[in-house]
Image 1: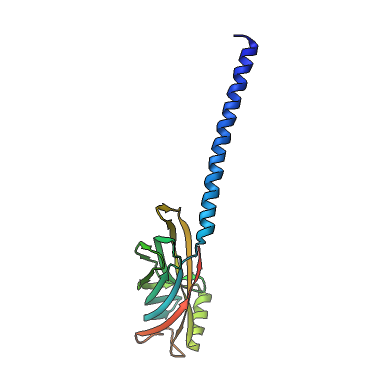
Image 2: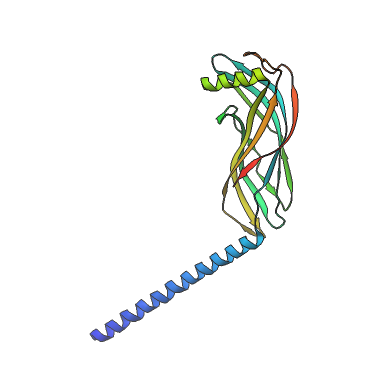
Length: 209
């Protein structure tokens, strides 16, 4: 084989590789455009969460800097999309005070939420002698003495979107529900909630997907 024939075959192979590369790139671009158009047309919205109520069974601050709490909350989630379903793969719910987690995380059951469907959970949140930072204990005692404390019921987990038979990858979900709880003013450090009290809250939650 002459040198000219070798150069010719090399050029043909190079052109074939370029055509294959261009075809693959074109398919990827076309798929990306289709996905973008479907996403734009459907215009998905994140789920909407509402903290409906909270029942306080125990909320006791003891020295030095420990909190024992037991509460039940009712949280609802609504899928506002009429063409998109939502998978909740794993959800942890817990209570926090000034960004410190003060109860153990409770796992909510995995759930699929159809178009415009609503789901209601009523988990128990509890923590026994949970250590609290000293400055937070002082702030908590001050709040209890004034008769009101702000807890945040938080949910962390993963969601997936379903359109027809197509299911997306997992997206991180963060939910933050403020709960303003009132106690008898001047609650002591050993017992701040003497009786079971249920609070109707109907508080809209902040949702970040």
